[in-house]
Length: 118
Image (cartoon, rainbow, N blue to C red; front, side):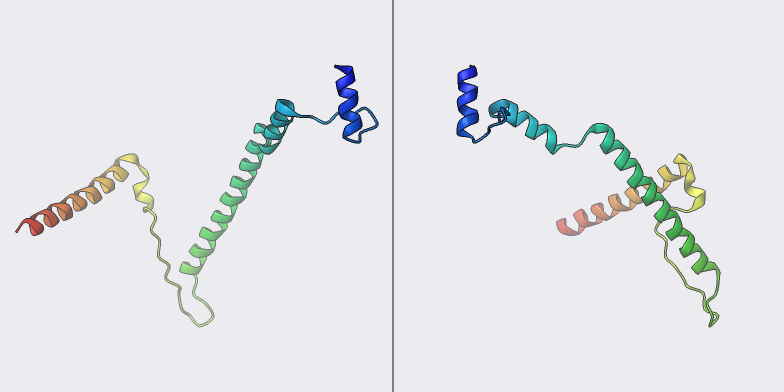
């Protein structure tokens, strides 16, 4: 084995005795290096989400200020919000809204089925 390692080192042009990794050893090292460490990835994701939450909070705050305060000409900017109202915080109210939407969809589907058969 030593003779083989020495021969590989000589043919590869390595003189300090460091043998290049080959086969499964090389493959496993390359594979491990392609994916980040779990702890590093988790901390990076948490940092990104914290920054994202901060940006969203500032964005909502700016929109709220724009909708409440008139500009220099006296105009108030009207903003559209597709988010649920503050009163729909409870799960029961969200469920009611969802059920109402599903009922509308069912009626529309039924109307389509009736129209196509007539």
